[in-house]
Length: 137
Image (cartoon, rainbow, N blue to C red):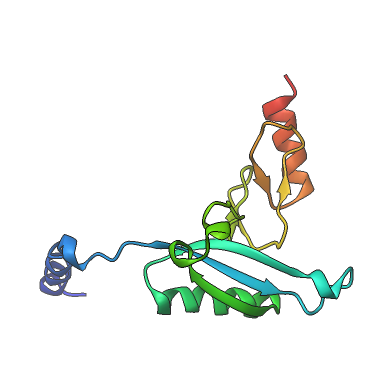
């Protein structure tokens, strides 16, 4: 890339005003897992995530559902959902492992076995290592 083009790109990026920035809203999505072997009737779950707009939210939800082969029941901005949804906290759509900091898409992340610890893990190995380092002493 030429030096002039680099300078132009830098100037374009620095010209972004506060009015151009779209804030991310919290969204809720409900999925159904048709491949659940335990109980196909009650295999629905809700997750929350952040997205700046409808189309971005749709892209996030559709990508997640396609990766895990889930059916999308609905998704809405959390602030326009009913009272029962607004006052509940739901697990994140995609989480980061507290121990190894890798992104994981498990339907149910593995929580720490210590009662007052809120850490979530991608595997039992990460949970055991976290427990040894953080709670053993």
